[in-house]
Image (cartoon, rainbow, N blue to C red; front, side, top):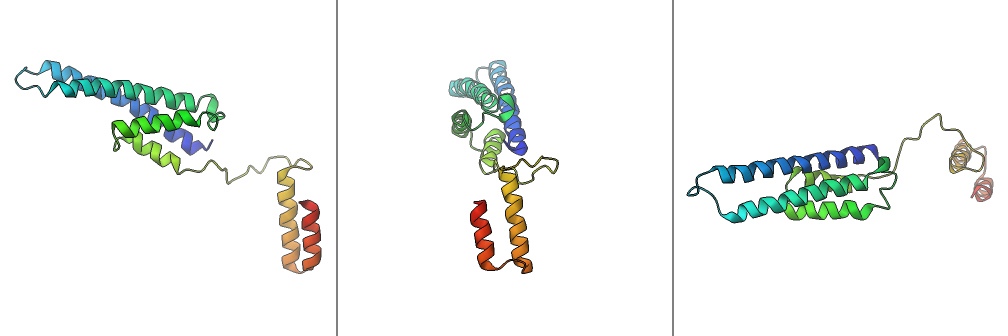
Length: 155
């Protein structure tokens, strides 16, 4: 899992739990106001629903990235479920926005560590050999036919 994606998902879970606190505040202020000045009871019921949804989103996100994100692909359904619940409850919440951003982040790691050992027959070794072949071909040390032959041997 991409480190940036993991951090954004953790932030989304934190903001989801912060929404729980805000909804509890709304419920308390509802009961603290005079009965004549209270909004409709629907708002309190909706606040309880938002509390349940926010807790569910936080739990699902934590379960999705459990074990340092190594199981993220196998638990992708938990992540998507949390995203859908968050969007249904409030599309413009910080939690929803962070989760929508994480959808578009790639899981590919573009920078490979330089101290990674090159194992014979590994993908990294093949990549390096192909890069060397291309370099030799570009310099004119290999003809097109020789380049194709060597490439076919590697692949």
